[in-house]
Length: 88
Image 1 (cartoon, helix red, strand yellow):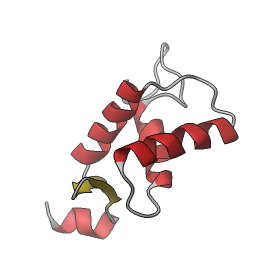
Image 2 (cartoon, helix red, strand yellow):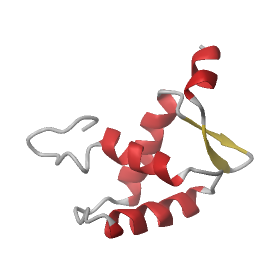
Image 3 (cartoon, rainbow, N blue to C red):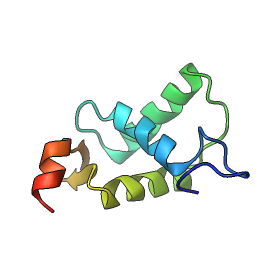
Image 4 (cartoon, rainbow, N blue to C red):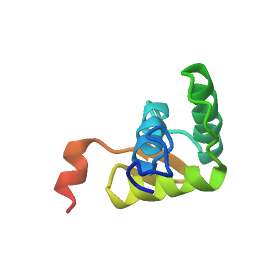
């Protein structure tokens, strides 16, 4: 589920979807803005395997647990690698 398996394609595993979400967070965005941008990005780049909103939220959970994103005042913010390492 987090990584590709027999049943989960590489473009749908949570790490790949999480990376795609991070691409959308070039600036702070609301969850709904990030979701809309992710759907548009996947369509533009030929990723036609469906990703539900629940799967998107799971990808956000993975990113949060890794310290890659945080929610500040109801807005998703991508954290820099240096900031994540300093707070551990």
